[in-house]
Image 1 (cartoon, helix red, strand yellow):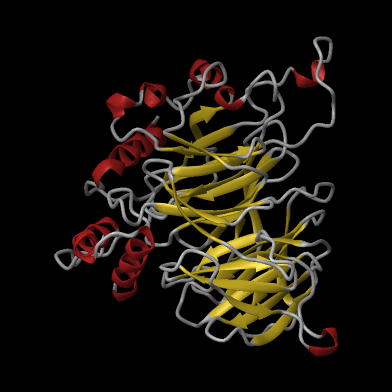
Image 2 (tube, one colour):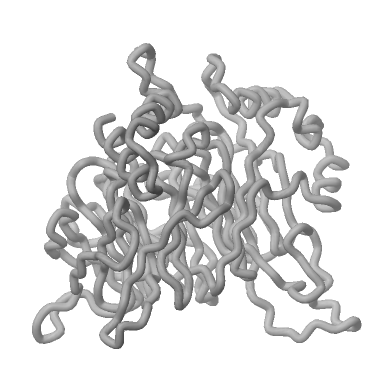
Length: 447
């Protein structure tokens, strides 16, 4: 927890808070992550059952559709590191934070049984609940990421970063929805240039931002225009060209950083000095998402207009281990996938409206379920409970009018859903505010 404590101090300094307040909040971070010195028991993740279709617990569609923007659609969704909420970005340049109710009495929508068809239909009539926090950006949102040691009970660490077109990197307060600070990069003409991808380093002390043929490193405690610049292209055009469109850090302290580019390559670097280690070739489209396995031995990459997620063994880096199919060969959208808490399964959406589950040990398809009637562009597992969220939607190039049925969209298009999976074993101890989720999940399996 040394990194967590240091990171908490760094975030507070960026906010201009005094250190004594920060030190008091460090204990909250420790307790929120379940690493308190008083607790010697190790949490065991629930074993999700993918042979049973998940239950749609909550659903959202209507609250972000307006007469002036009837085709507004979600672009991505990500659970927070502490599992208390999930964050979405949409085509109207807006970020919405949803925190599911913490008690069953607060969640009447989830009271019906698993096989209740009327309950399933009622979810599409009205949204389950309104977004808790709404934040507006000035332009299209390129990427966003949570602070790795985020805890909703700690106001210091409850933040996330965003990057938007023609704007600097923003650090947002997830509690109040207020902008805390900005990190600005300038080009040769001394004009602000926007990052295309961002990520916090594992220690939570820096923001790594991807640009055209370079990345910039910002110290989290020094907002403003100070940064370190590293070019991904060396002399004679050797190196990684194109826009750095995706990045991921190894979850273990191996010091490895994966950068994906729109030139269809993924490169592995050392985090400390940005030394290029090797390239990974094989993606048919520009890289839109990269993610390490839970043990850090494998890397999964996906691209636009590319129907396959490629699995790479970073210890060998010769050929890809296997390919996972998804319906994405006809879209430039960024389709996000995710790995479940056990590290054994991967879930991904596609243009067919399905979420496909794959066994990462064998590379074989396990199951699928229908999440929407259009492109499922985001899927994210809860960090430790049997839940997931999916987002859907795509741009429709049609002029809306009263006689056009194309824009008479149903509640299962341009939508967001939270899912509950059945599981074989679950933690019986109280998980604070998230305990109700656990209880609801158990009842779903018994219905």
